[in-house]
Length: 112
Length: 115
Image 1: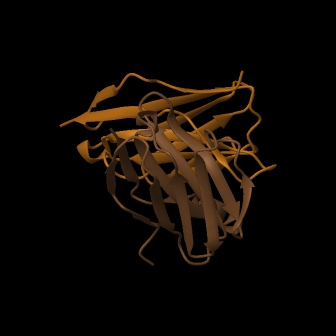
Image 2: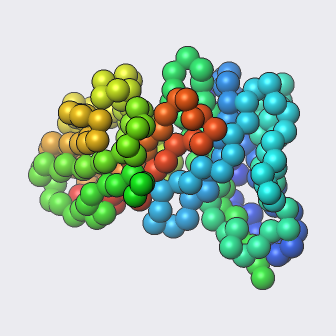
């Protein structure tokens, strides 16, 4: 069956450290992968997109990797801050249709 | 642009009643998506439109759910009759394929409670 797995347990880290979140998928062949941030009571907000032919993408303190062999994406936040505390969602996109399939998200807590 | 606008923000209704959720997408976006989010199932795609035409409604739970997009600036999601298991946060999102690098823009959602 098709699955997208993100760590359901919250990730709790100290301010200033690097947060690494994982997104694994099974029985999908995504053309691209997106990461979103969601705060309580709000809709998801787009952060980054990485395509299947790209290994890594960076934006300010954010870095995303995409390994189509391992069927995995890693999302890194360097020099984390308490304001980075939120739920982070990965989403798979297919070229055959323009729709995103979302993972269930990982909650990140950054302690001051 | 004010972003994707959803109304109402909160809706509490009794089982069996009809519920209508509304969405105004970003001007110029030709794709509109309806998602439902629950703790158990996460964010599920219900239906999406391209140029006001429904493209994929395979995520719509059952015949009690219907969605329309009469024009480029308005869409509705209707549940009739509503049931307690429909309680969730319903999100509308819009996008355009030519701006894939900008992702989807989501509204703030409608929290539906069916009692």
